[in-house]
Amino acid sequence: MDGAARSHGGWGELRMSELSTDLSVNYATAGTELSPEDIKRGHDRRRVREQRAKGRGLSLLWLLIGPGILVMLGENDGPSMISYATTGASYGIGFFMPFIVLTFAMAYVVQEMTVRLGAATKRGHAELIYERFGRFWGFFAMGDLVLGNLLTLVTEFIAIRAGLGFFGVPGALAVLGAFLFNVGVALSRRYWTWERIVLGLAIFNVIFVPVAIMAHPVTGDVVRSFFTWGPLPGGVTAAFVLMVMSNIGATVTPWMLFFQQSAVVDKGLTTADIRHGRIDTALGAVIASIAAIATVIATTPLFLHHVDASSFQGADFATAIIPYVGRAGATLFALGLFEAGLVAALTISLSSAYAFGEVTEGARSLNSSLRVGWPFYAVLIAAAGTAAALVLVPHAPLVFITIIVNVIAVLAMPPAIVFLLLLVNDREIMGEYANGRITNFFGIGVTVLLVLAGLIFAVVTVFPKLLPS
Amino acid sequence: MNCEATITDLAKAEAPENWVREVLEPDQLTTARMHFGRKKLTKGTLVLLWALRVYVVFMICIIALAVWNTLHTAG
Image 1 (cartoon, rainbow over the protein chains, first blue to last red):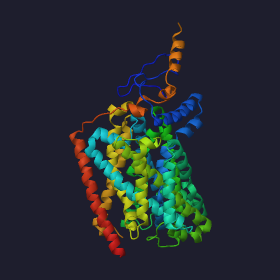
Image 2 (cartoon, one colour):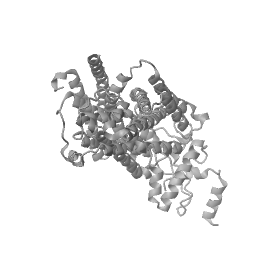
Image 3 (cartoon, each protein chain N blue to C red):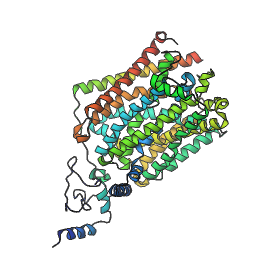
Image 4 (tube, each protein chain N blue to C red):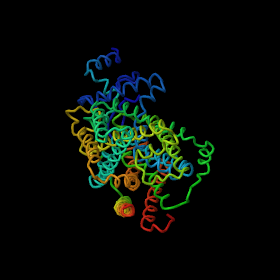
């Protein structure tokens, strides 16, 4: 019974009747005033309880999916899709196909831990870091998040502008429209509503699949690449190292940790829902990897026809693939770029607001009323608004930001994952849901891999002649 | 006296939002949050956290160098 009061962190449970399962009211909180946020969350949880009691598996899954799919598809954002497009245009079908699957497997390992953390502790990621490690280390974690989120949000609005620019929509209109949409969805003041709208948008990430089909890939090449991890045209070069970093940065970023854990808490998931949270996260990883691989395939004709895509930005890819996938395929590609930027703008600005609310011990939920939650909504709007405004500033260093954002994401991940591992191994707060040896093995493995990727990038940058160009 | 019937009457007499307290766990209620308190970090953990902080600062310098090279070459 997921709503039952239980022993955790000192709260006692007093069951009035062992025969009735409807009356396990926690008398420790009987006098506690309920907020509008509690009532809204209660409505959501009552539906979950009802479906669970009736044994309706699919209905229960429908109710519980959300944070995992959104974080994975949100990470297939503007720069990520451009990174995958560049990969296809530079390397074709080969090494990077199974590599992308590996990166999403890494993402699953990391994100699954945030599900357990949120469900077991009922706390957001920023809140836990501040509480358990203190303001000093919390400040560092928040600093990485705020800087990373601002840069990433700028690139999302760049992608929105580029995607809609393909259809002749003026940049200012595209950016303003996306910003207002973000504000409107957030001000529904209902987590469930926000989640379902964004899920509906996010699923369009698979729009790259028909584009891939239109590119007429050789099926044998696609299948073979997953077994042989090849070919790798040009071998291991400095550009290859940069592409590897870019692909990793396209899949694992700090905001994902903060977003999913806080969304799990906002949604009201409990330890009874961890299994569904894992399914949700796995589903997200699978769908996102399919979309990513499809994007690589979609731009492979550029590689095969020796088109130099090294200086391509956003909609340039849509224009360049017209001869190979037709106007319809290019249209779908541009729409996919717009969708990628929009969904990410929605999720990333929310992650900033969650973190702010948690560290200031204020409202931290999309179920908050305006009266109580206005700082939370103000931060969400300010995060998106600042990024949108920067995109419209003439001569803003947008190329600079686009180049570094994925790389910064890779570099900021090791400290973020270490905080995550420390928290998820903390038996005082996690109890029986703390990491086991196997999960720690994979978690530490992902951290080591990310640190190595960063160090290799550093070596190649400082000593460019070490590898062939 | 039927104990369960008395319990049912008591429940119904309480606030109408009692169902919210039934479906939410205690630490999900916004006004009943507990604080976990500070965790004592071991020396090894502190060394690791500082090492990663130095790593991030070092890598930011590397990125700046990389971008400078990229833009300088392109220009």
